[in-house]
Length: 296
Image (cartoon, rainbow, N blue to C red; front, side, top):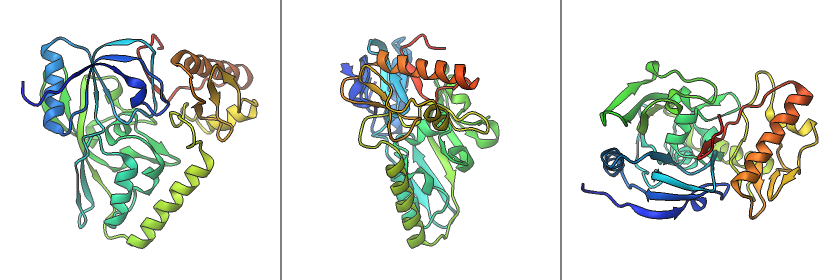
């Protein structure tokens, strides 16, 4: 098959923002949509399990040997902008901060909040990533996918996707996101948009631990509450297991001080859940996607 470049036994800790992960049996970084589709077809024809990772944020990979093919999308960076209509077409690997800055420079409003999220568009759509009252689902028009069982590619309209808080059906079905069409408000004031984007990033860097490897937010916010607030009220900031620590900057972040492994981090997630449940009566749902675990 053409356009196939597969490596073997690759250390995935280099491809996650928390710098933890096992080894992939097969690994590839496609540069465009065609290469990506060919890789998925290759895994299907060779009866290999296929895992997709983007920028590796919001992702905990177990320190084990992962069978099958792991595809990293972050070199799929094509983005097309229609400044007059506000329509954006982007591949799954486009980084959200990159997209945010491009939107602002083209006078498109409504994507400023994405600047501080270190993930790809595909991952953001899959997780329905958000910040405050914003979520990526609000801007989605349609999503181009490939079905891993039939190898068909097609486009799904927003109305046919059941987006929920930090959830999309792509977390459970056989469809892999290739690219998406999004809509933003056109003809905005470019200077103001660039300033808002800059201020948003500054606020995030001041209130979140950007100086150490982390996932981003670990837990979803419960209804009418904040995971970080609940964790902080129990005095868990700075609590450690091994080299994994609840950030002293923000309670809903776990940081890797240098040599944390996946067990340290999973154990810390579990202890936080138990303490919050015991003391607050609330079970915190992880926002983090886990690969290679028996975690429910």
